[in-house]
Amino acid sequence: MKHYAIESRNLIVKGKWIQQLLQGESAEIKELSHKKGLLFSTITLEKMIDDEIRHDRFLLTGDSSRSIRTYSSGEQRKALLNYLFQLQPDFLVLDNPFDCLDVESVNDLKNSLIAIAGQIPLIQIFKRHSDILPFITNVLVIEEEQVGAFYTIDQFRDKNLHQRKAFLQGKIPSPLSVYNDIPAKLIEIRQVKVNYEGRCVLNDINWTIGQNEFWHLMGSNGSGKTTLLSMIYGDNPKAFGQEIYLFGHKKGSGESVWELKEKMGYFTPSMTELFQSNHTVEQMIISGLVDSVGLYQKPSDSQRRLAQEWLHTLGLMDKKENRFYRLSQVDQRMVLIARAMIKHPPLLILDEPSTGLDDYHASLMVQLIQKIAAESTTSIVYVSHRKEEGLKPDFIYELVKSETGSKGVVVS
Image (cartoon, rainbow, N blue to C red; front, side, top):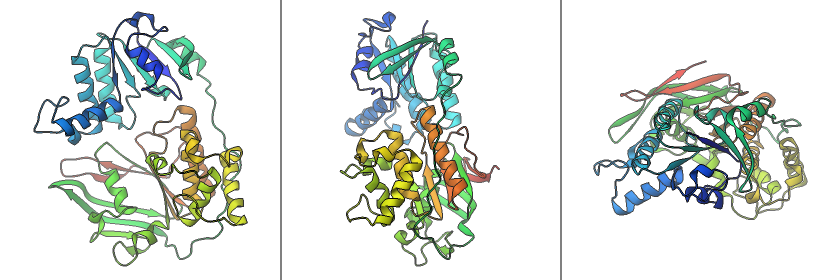
């Protein structure tokens, strides 16, 4: 039985090529002609969750006493796989099945896919070469909804032994001004405990982040990473009254959320959805100097020069007049990280910055993060399930789940 992998930077699962494939109208994969497939995707999962909410149809759990929304990401995808397989399609299309899953959930889902690979053809859309399933026999490269190349898996691996690497030129630009009176300990978290609806999520968390340190925050799905970040950067009410010190002040003792955020840069991929107005790339970077969503005042010459220095470093100088919302996914992310870094805040939080990127663009992101770590005094908290090649944090802080709540462990 043949199993296929599809490499594409711009393939849309709702697009024409995938829809023809699912309807058995693919000219390239002839053994699937006139057969019907189903899509294993976050799109399918979100539709079924919405259906559960609107119509009380508990198709994925088969249990009206527990919503699929209460499952972890890994459990949700396993439930979806079991449900689709029970519908007995002729084949399944797997849309980047391992995105945003922790290591344990990836291994669990991979074993489930291996178990059904002997019974049904699987077609895996992938971005990371390390994600290619072990039973894949052939690889298609799709360009602009057209098949650009067709390989056996051995041919594809030989071709990609020497993948091109990303390279950023120039240095991280200096800020227009510097922060004063920043303590040696930026963040201190002492014996923090968080409960939700009677369940302990974080238990006795102790973590100190000092100046000019690079941390990788890790933890399985549901371990409390988002909760912990929201207590540092956000306005999570669970933080107040606890021993959390930000830049030398106990949280809730006087400084406003905005005064604290002014000392922190923050990026998560979902932020790109906030910036859909008609601002240029240059204006988006400058807006980081005035803490606005977009730019609504005329910038000074020094502000424009600084933004252009950042664009030179990012290799985006030729796109400075382009509309931000028209940039590629990775370019949008790099611009927003530059926007977060333009003032060289004492702390920069990067929440899953490389999720959903292919190997080349992930290496570009890693280079940018490493440059910030090496060429600035900003401390970095990098959050990701993956250990990216070339990323060299000073320390790893891992949240380890248990029945009594997650504990924090400094791994290195």
